[in-house]
Length: 173
Image (cartoon, rainbow, N blue to C red; front, side, top):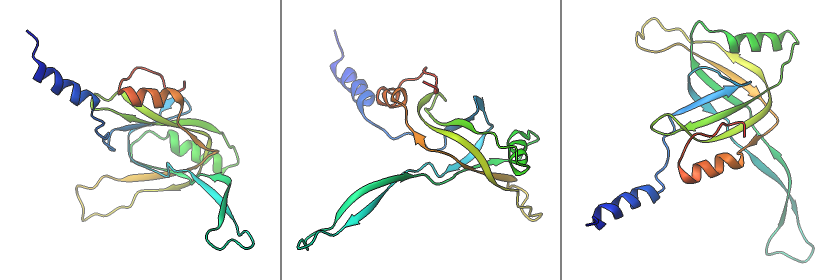
């Protein structure tokens, strides 16, 4: 005998689009997981528009898309003795600019990728060191690295994987 109530409940939980948690993510840069980050900001895109006022039409203003802009990505992480990102920034400051592609991967509760956004041709333009405060004995020392890049995409594989809620596809696809 089939338990229709239990099956319907499981189906409802499977189909219900619960939002993913924003704390569960990884950052990959140049094919390497670039450490544990506490925050990523600047994962944005905006289409700028040009306004055109048509003579004799006062009810609205035409708006035409012109270009897409992307703010810098800001990566915040706890300070460790691994200096890969500092070395990248330091080399860039000395004129040795290495453009790297990367991804920000959103993970599910099992820490498997459910979707990701790729950025391309990134390099560091700003580094912020830790703030030290002897009166706070529980605060982690953090650094920030700001990256300029040439755009953000959400690959079709990411969109499909996010739609089915599964995992197992490599972000570079």
